[in-house]
Length: 442
Image 1 (cartoon, rainbow, N blue to C red):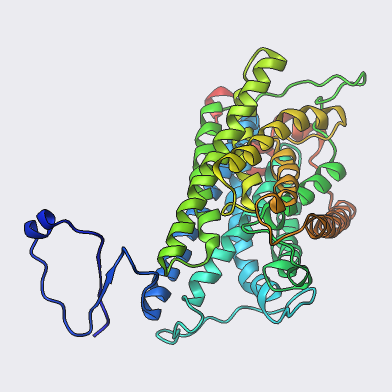
Image 2 (cartoon, one colour):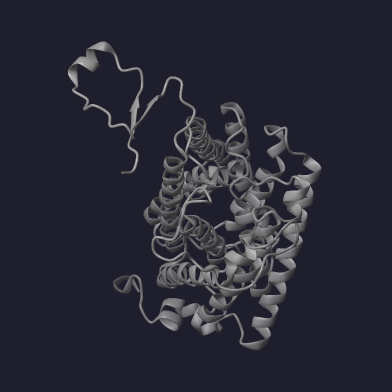
């Protein structure tokens, strides 16, 4: 019979008298939480597996957050297209991560530059003995949802003018090859891990990778028609559904607890449970700081508080703390997340001045805040160095940006990546999807 775990944490005499606990069988384990530091290996394996699964489905729910955010921030004539792209990229990313992504990222990297190609083979029914410290399928699932997140970042930046199928082909390459290769450099035990580069939950490995790929796509694709005037003026193109964008942001905020908390990778001891809890706290505070700082700066600079900028301020705070959500104190977490809010307020208009059309603000949120969060890790983690962090940021950035540019240019030359001016004017819901999100308002 499998062991049962009964936890008694300082039960008072009154409480003890109020409840009748059954006698313990000989194979039952009693742990006093006032002194215990862990559980049996078998129980730890189960708890670790549950952390992967719960964290994984929270991160999976972020796919809904990205979809809602993007559908809310695009114009109504393109909302269905964003919904289609987001469900498609999650599906394609999951298949590609099984087909070759996981092995490329984790199998046989051994201090090198990538793992091995080929599908991941799961243990048969009842064959997982837990020797890894968790169910291997739970680990695969947790890592897969991170992969899909990377592609979601690209979707928002290139919205409203990209063809569907070239975007999907790019997603295949990003999730099946590009993301796993750079991920193997650190998380897979590759050369950056050997150097001591640190990225706890993916400020660079997930968010900046997606940001670099998005920036390359925006440059090759060009701006939306009418976005920028010949005189350098910027013509706002408001989103169709701000309540939907707010909902999407809160979904992403919720999912981030799985994103960062699950990246502890263990919850089989009291110490691990405490660390996961602290990660939750720092994650939440950094997001709050990003939103509040954005609000204050917007009021000072523009005399109005743009809700979309505040949403991105919260998200930038989340991205900023993702590289190291455990070691910061509360003031440090507030500082790191708050700078994320500054980044949004500064870089969103800067991109417009440079005529880089980023529809949802993903480049400041994910690329720039991801760089910031990764760079500042040594402020709170004395096991890292600024030099090594910079090497990691630059190497991953150069590889992803150059490789993405090559892929985008090839797609542009072979099949074209942009819809016609007439299709863009009519909206991609009509030309690419055939289903309008808001037909009664068209």
